[in-house]
Length: 141
Image (cartoon, rainbow, N blue to C red; front, side, top):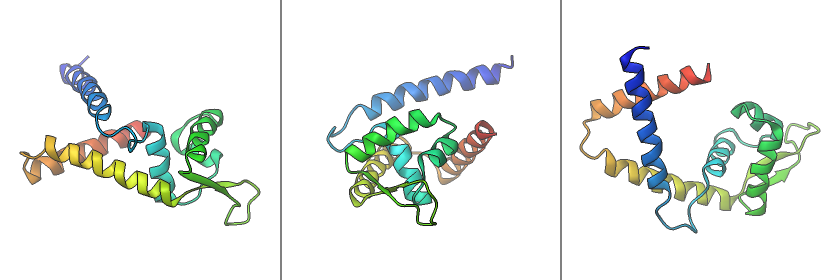
């Protein structure tokens, strides 16, 4: 195995550790759990989606997505609506409260990243963002 890949694995492990440390601090009543944030961001970006569509988008079992979306529904962060395109399946739509909570969570996360990256040049930031986008695209393939 190439040494660079071992280096990348170590750095990803550290990112995971630091991310967990960062996400456990802050005002708990405002923080969204990771899966809730991810689902709400997708609903915000894509509009109403069915459980099946969300499961396919994240390559998850529908029972897993059903449990995760139940949390959103109980918290008033999403609501079930008839399919706007006339389909049989009901869809989930982000609520105003969901939009507010996603915006607060995003601001919290961006603020934290801004503090960590405050000394980086625009070129370093662009290169890092490009590398992460390429990495994520490779994972999705």
